[in-house]
Image 1 (cartoon, one colour):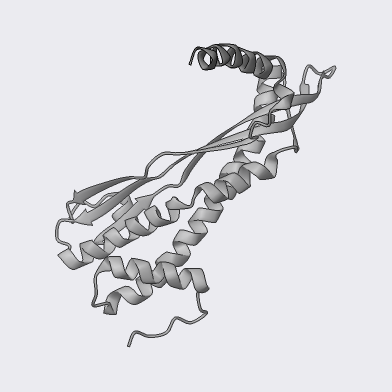
Image 2 (image 1 turned 135 degrees about the vertical axis):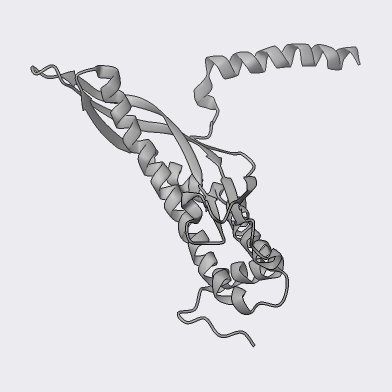
Length: 224
């Protein structure tokens, strides 16, 4: 037992020393994705004074797939011209994406219960798509690794920020386009079946997602 304790006391500090002094021996991920739980809020509004998002409708679901990204980079080139403008070229070496999904279900005070249940289905579709949202976020981050981005400004730090923001915007847009496209396609299937659907909204959510996965048909079949 004493020998084991002595071995641990020697090995742990040695491992820490090696990691600190020789980081190149260890492979650290150049992509990091963090995902907060989805947040769903329900609000009932006065039908005579609806919020702008629900104008002309009994209900609607407002959502946003948020991606806040950041980069670590190397400065490849940096120079100040005779006009005082800094030209900066950066290469991205590490990317991080922080994901969140706020959802607000807006319901008129006059809406029938069944219609309210089906509006909840839109929120559930967003949540279900969000389960795998780390995959397009990872792909978006991976896409900028090793690439160069440029910026210019009379302030050097602002020029760097402009270059980084180009990379961030590309990550954010690619992620948002991927998840938004999926949600909207599933909504089309869900909304097509909803008017004549006789089972629960949860069952319809499952059906819409399943049909999406096998490939949405050009013309949705009628319900039998």
